Image (cartoon, rainbow, N blue to C red; front, side, top):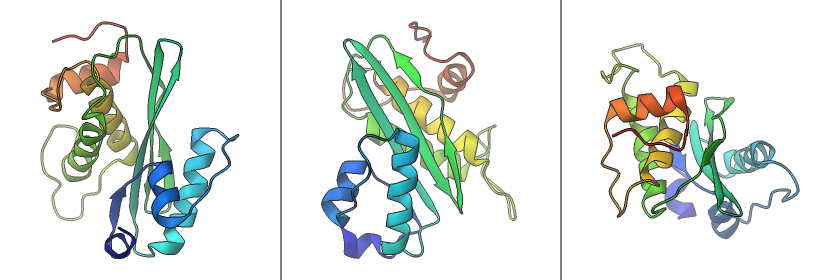
Length: 166
């Protein structure tokens, strides 16, 4: 992986894979935002062309699940809100949904249209969209995140109310 990633401009990772593949350790007593900053700074030394890095974070407190994400975009950091997920049906595929949401956000505007020449994505919207995709996937059984843009946008506006509107 390090040899492949060395040439990447866009990557999705987690703290564990950064440690396994690159030996990057972060301060485990720090919050996710600080750990993301530490990890991305270290990854930038190993992947000099990296312009975009995204990570999702999941913690469990008893039966309560908390899901969030972070994005490094061309020198700046963006963080999603923390979403409390009262009911998790299936976590398998949530990382893929997060990644798909991030890639979609990088390629399409808030109306779902491809960016034109000279247009840039809004990084905060990108991470919010990606996290909404990953969070919603956890309410669906199986590997596939069969969700619509409308459902994702509704989640972004309303958060995790405990009720998924389908």
